[in-house]
Amino acid sequence: MKIKVMKEHKRRAIELIDLAIKEAEKNELDLARRYVSLAVNYANKYKFKLPLKYKRKFCRKCFTPLIPGLTERRRIKNKVIVVSCVCCGWIRRYPVKKTDKGS
Ligand SMILES: [Zn+2]
Image 1: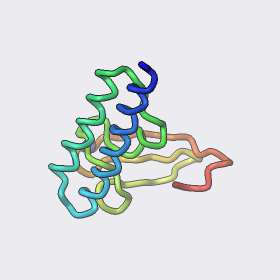
Image 2: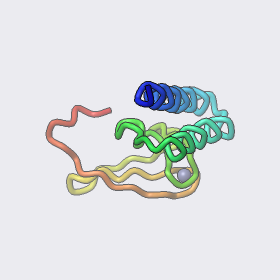
Image 3: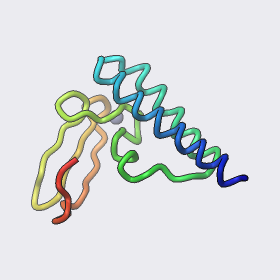
Image 4: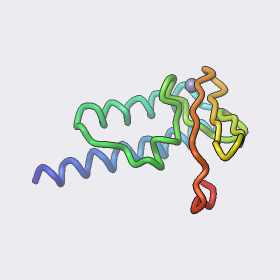
């Protein structure tokens, strides 16, 4: 039973992030941040991990969904992807994987 409830929270959190991305695309960044922070709060409260794919979709510092060309700046340097948040300047580096076909 508990696992089922957990799945429900996780599904909800993922939905919130998807929604946040849609709002960010419409330039509703305040609303988008609120959705992301809600999703993060869900994850903390119910102790589940957001899928890596989703974790990389928002800025961990200001919760802005990262959209390339809009809120995200992306550069590839020495096989490392350098992602930075345009809103707060937060920088994250990811190694480039050979199997990575891009996002
Ligand atoms: Zn940020």
